[in-house]
Length: 333
Image 1: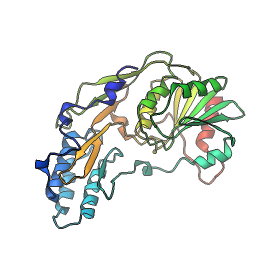
Image 2: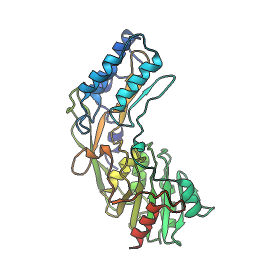
Image 3: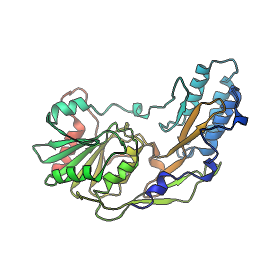
Image 4: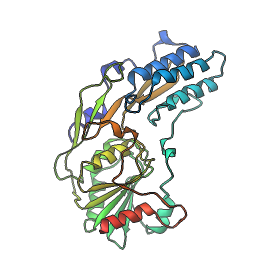
């Protein structure tokens, strides 16, 4: 796999001073100074202002007048967290010893996943667990269902070889990434390497390289090469708004792999790698400092990777997962 390590650790030099060990000369409890420090850091380093049409200057005019030195730390934290939430990015957080701010992109759409419903209606009691995967035959043995709930960094080629050998005679696979909030991106490449039969360009990336909203490094390609057991039949990848970060990277990559079809609801985005630092008062923060670009070299999918087949759950029927049913129909066509 080429450019993966470069991509994961793509942090420009101008971030090197942004360490969690803070410069004592800048230490202050002044709420105005801490507000301006955080606003400036985001202004210079956040990667998606233009993609999301965010007017960061106007947001400052809304929040800055609310700052006063007499407000409690809790109130001040809430104000800063609300300001960061204007970025609508779950890679954006403020962290103190009493709270963590977050946006919650998955709440932008209806809930589309219920693991207990799947266990009760689609899987046998003795379904397999192989590392981070839960899996079994479904549809009378015609289809392999693989649930992958989190990118733990522990996916191995042995896991993949075992599953793909087990399901080698199926008509197709369903890989369920719904409500997968991400994790270690290396897992995505381990998984994807078993669904390509030649080196494949997946997407491009670039990182912030200066204080201007449009200042980025050169665009770099990210590719994956075949590894281990190859599965070339139809693969339906299920996603929803809770599919975020490494889940969105994987979803974006399916666009470059001919036998993979993305189904469900638009992902939650999270295609920027997060980086951060420390405020003068000791709180820490992070936000996205890079962009992932699709094969057309556009960063537009940061707001969610779109599916090829859109399906939502019908919660009036508590015994059926409409998204799995649609995937079964697609494989059996």
